[in-house]
Image 1: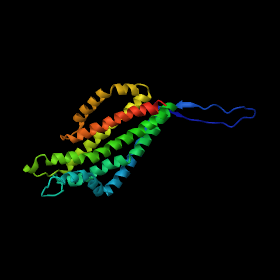
Image 2: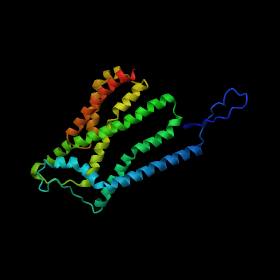
Image 3: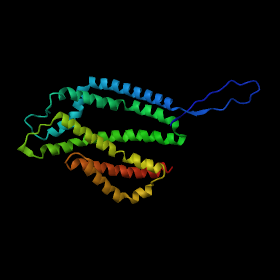
Image 4: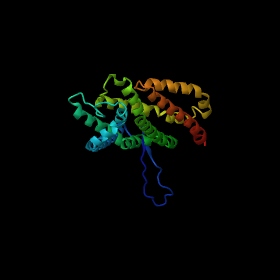
Length: 264
């Protein structure tokens, strides 16, 4: 249970030398539940507000999400150009709502993280707070970096998949299926890009060292390549190659960070 520090001070009595000491007490279960309810309500309100804003600009958002597919379709020479299709009667309405909901969740993420931090911070020691803040910031940063990297890399894999059959088929991508595929690739890249955060956290608490990571370099490269081949949803060779290369660079960067920053 998180502990709240509740300080109180009384007026000095005549002849008193010091004010009463600060009282520390733990919140009761009901008080914790009230704090949790308040945080959940704030997060839901923030998500609803950002979802409404995202829905207003849903056409622009969908155009941005379609850009990797349009770049891939430039290499297909399809008689239909760069158009995508919708195969379900309700997709025309469902897709804007789904895109707005996901975009709203991303936009509301800073508020959600802040509410989580407010809820757990009082129960942390000073050193734990110093470690938690860069950990949370690093988690968000590397997830965003992984998602952006996937966004710029995925057109290469899509072009390979779209042109693999050559002129034996006309490539007509379904918008709903494409957006689901894009979301999965972004999620995979975002999660795997958390590797340096995990390594640096282990280094900060003394579980691993830069010397150990250097000794494990060959095994780490093998594991990285193997995992990249398994987790990437596309059947093209380019997406796992780019993911492996990026993770190897992040692994080497983690070694340097632990050695030159954490050790100081």
